[in-house]
Amino acid sequence: MKSLKFILPLALFVVLVGFLAAGLKLDPREVPSPLIGKPAPGFSLARLDDAAKTVRREDMLGKVWMLNVWASWCVACRDEHPHLVAFARTKAMPIIGLNYKDARPDGLNWLSRFGDPYDMSLFDQDGRVGIDFGVYGVPETFVIDKQGVIRFKQIGPVTPTIIETRIVPLLKELS
Image 1 (cartoon, rainbow, N blue to C red):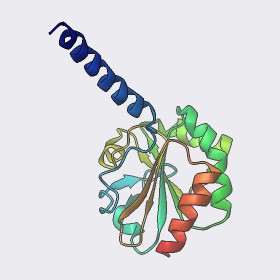
Image 2: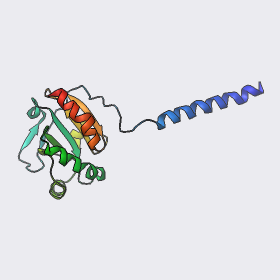
Image 3: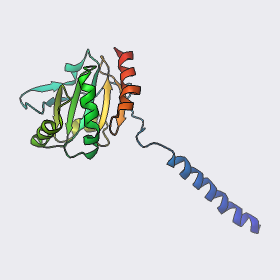
């Protein structure tokens, strides 16, 4: 009876350590998105550079495109930005920026300072469209097919490796 008194807490401890060890091996950037394979949320947003021009999800139908969520206050966006600028030069697909919870002048100044890889940037000042896309934080990137269905989501900065191994092959598949 005394040995059972020590074995039960020890077994419970071993199980908890096992769960902790398994959790530490998970990559937090690989959060599965419930939106993959589903239509991108509808939106109607003003352009960052021209508040009088509005862009809707429907305007993007018929082409494979990338939506990159960014902000001028985002440190990781600065790391990602040169890779987006380089990828934009290939003209492989339209890249649409979603300026998330930012001030319009700050976003415009940031693009002027670091370069503008976007075919256009949309202004999501209150973050509602970002929330509809399930954005956890910036940067996040989505690839959306010709029918408006989300096919890929990257949480965190896009790197050259991600572009070469995930985005370009997916683009070839969807084109």
